[in-house]
Length: 223
Image 1: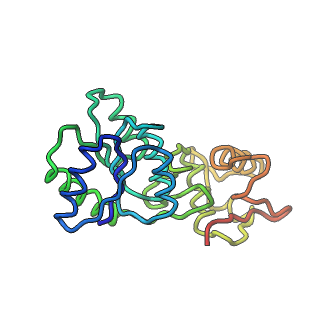
Image 2: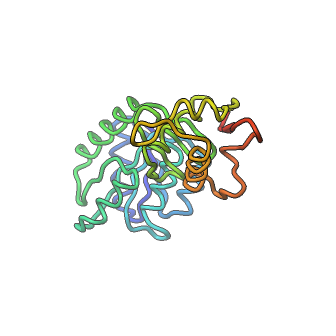
Image 3: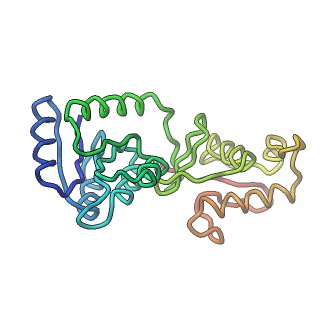
């Protein structure tokens, strides 16, 4: 595997690079958020190891970058603060290892995380939004966002018809509210508005859910 280590403790970096190399893996290292951003834009990796405390920025920011690139993340932390650990996992971190750690145990966890990520459902990208339809997860800029059940059903229809025109009549037939009743035209407009407010950078000028006046909507995603 090819690993990016984001850690400002040079002794830990040297230990990890030597150990991973001895096990047949490649490990690149950087000491802060800015360098990590450059590396993630330039190179391909299988996994990111990141310390919570860095020379610039913090591990949470690096985690958001990695998740935007669909990379699994393991936090390396000397912190015993449970809130930090929970925050990291809630942001999309896959695991954490407390310092000092045993390299063999860390490698075992890395392999487990990569296997788990390879078996997960693929993400469908709509600009800076990623949707896992089967898993019921939606991410924006790498961070998970919460949708109501109806909002998610609406988004799932858009994802499955990505790039195609979806008529308002079809949407009203395919989605229904919490009471089990089909939505009407006004309700559909409200829910499209709410969905845009959560996934669009500028809901007043939507780039993902585009209106085709008098007919319906077309959702634009990555090729």
